[in-house]
Length: 97
Length: 460
Image 1: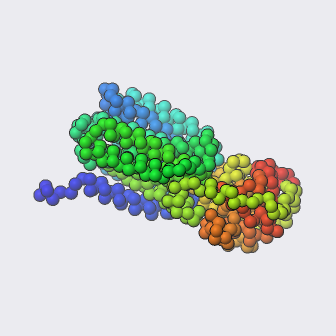
Image 2: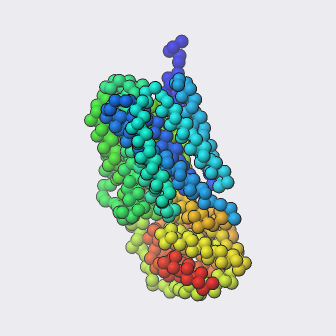
Image 3: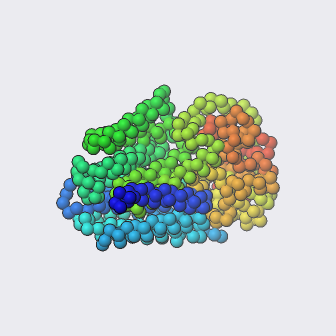
């Protein structure tokens, strides 16, 4: 039966394609007035790449990969804090009368 | 923590990210959406930190605090008019982080469970090559976009003969090196491919002019998403795959909306050079225009029952949004109905004008999008154009030879009177004359946008 199993890559590809569709419908529902906050927040959440950076930075012993990982953690952290905070700042300005 | 539990936590983070975007469907829900996004990020980071291979907490903490501090500082200090630059700078960081993670995965594949050094799974090699290449293009392209928006370099398109062939050649070389790397795991093929991708990122953005920046910023937004998704496949992490897909499609949709608002194809924007060839066709100054003073404008505005304000990039440059808001308040106090009309490509990024007006405390109910307000111009006493030009040019409707023919415009010429705040009669970005300047119902108010509006305010 092992030969019948689906390659895990195909599972991930399925998730990816479905997420593209989710993104498509969710983003079309965003009001044009909030397109700038949309870009700021998508920027913040794409910094979830920090999970890859943390794994590279994880080992206790120094290596090239750890140094690269730490630098990536630093860059992604700028984005995460900056992206979410600036989004919050913008959204706080959108007020009713 | 078991791998299954971690996978479920990443799924939870993905759902929170989707809800963060969903919240932006209305300003009322959006703040809560942002909280969901922050929660999702906290879950993703905490889950990774709890993984057995992650031990060196001290240095990680230093990197997190240093990065977090810089990000917090930037987010608090940035002016709303400079938001496009900030977003471009942030895109570049995502791109560079993607490149660094892809290189780290190459040197320490065992940490990611994708093989041993020199024996990485073929699928992972393909994925890390794609992720690194898109990340590198995102990084250098965003740096160029940042420099143009910050006016460190000229915003004019930089075109040279053979440009597109050079880009095509570089693109093909990228693919060839990527294939070579996937087949042989050759270190130099991988690193040279990444270096070429950095060069290609620069070359892709230099020919694109300032006013096409809304498309460029959206496009780089999209690229940063695809780069994250590519890395997500390498790391076999669903949170990254889902987020990358969300961000990638979001940027792609915004690019499409911007292109549609200019009636240009995505390809024509990417190939660049717009506004160069046509700049010589302008014959400004040969026809008579009616210029007015701030007092004249105040007199007309005082008599108006309905006013629509049309802001453009010039309002952002002059930081005139607060003065405009004060003027609108004064007019509203004397009984006029004042609204704002936003063209999708007004400004340097999608939604730029909305943020500026929000900064000046304009309630969002008074701000309308093109399709919602365009029919109202015919019943409007005064259309007040400030810092905009091409998006009001009637040639887009009447002159098939115009470079902007077919672009949806705001029908300001239908208003009883058009007040047009502008520095001079110089053409807009498209390099074409605006017939609106010479119409009998148009009054030009020459000068700096902020000073003109302040003058009107005084005269009111």
